[in-house]
Length: 488
Image 1 (cartoon, rainbow, N blue to C red):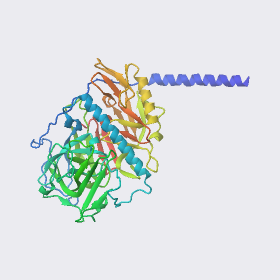
Image 2 (cartoon, rainbow, N blue to C red):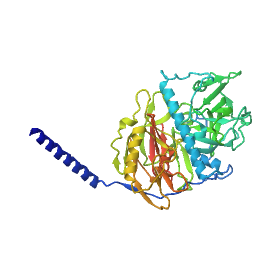
Image 3 (cartoon, one colour):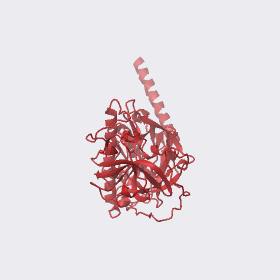
Image 4 (cartoon, rainbow, N blue to C red):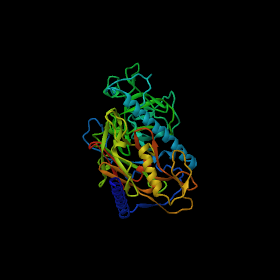
């Protein structure tokens, strides 16, 4: 009799809980937003010219030395997607190549982090490894997705440079070439630059390299090897870089005479990582250690993407989340992701512990400009995907595509309703536009959920999810901000 009474109480309790859940669901209806399906865009065309007037330029300044000047700078640059260097390819081929680059880049990130975490104790500052060792330092330039045009040397030679928040060392191809890949501009000739200067082996800059050496004149040599087998090798030097009409002197960069592997038509790479040799770290006092970018969805706007250095890089009203530090690796920008909402409701199976970085540097979440597709650790991805599928039952399913396992046939549709999606960072809830997570993958109306799972404990927030936001890096305040209207 007692058992029956207990069972009745349990049954009634279950009914009450169910009614409470239904009541909560009715009071908080599933949230949807509108997606206007647009086809895959063709490759953009390059719109700038070396001689065009710079309508947004700041007033012309004299050359500034980042090590001695007390003057702070502000500068804005246009960014273009790397597809602009392959304008004759079809949209389908360009998208396929983008996913291939993405797979290589994410694999390189995971390899770099795992090697750094396995290194115990961590690499001491100033350690100099021989060139015979395989050092992964940064990411393949071929996997960088955006580039800009800036001047190198005196007089300035305008060159296309890939921007990369996952790399530190700044470098360009230099003549004479032992091996140089094809680039759009003439190879930079350091002998024709009045500001080019080699770095002595004894210099702290030389000792800051992961992989350094000396030539017969006791001048510094550098080597950067990438996870896909690409490599750049040459003289480590200082040079003047010119951004529009603002010149910054004595920037440490690699002058590469032997550059091989997966590279695109740009002349080199501008490292925007957190390491000591990255451009923001070297010139921190000149730009108040602040920069930001806004990456524009090419299928929705003809407005160019942009990069800003200095105080103007931080937009008003931005939502900020603190930067975290990996004790084993200083290159990447780690942030704290607490959860994800789909349709206005927190996904219940996602807890902050899924994204937590442990004391050894394992796991965590990085935000990266060169990775396209956001990769979530597998349990978090599965829960997010299943919640999205449940809220998108009104959409016709399509076969899987490449790394995407949740796709829809939107052919013939001009407007559809899709579940909302919010990334909850500590202190900043990032509500994504529908175009930032449901993207076209062909010209037949197939759209896929632009997230992927990874068995690695490290999650990566990619540039598809960052589109349309101004992403502001305030290194002085150790924080990253997001402004939904920052591209205006």
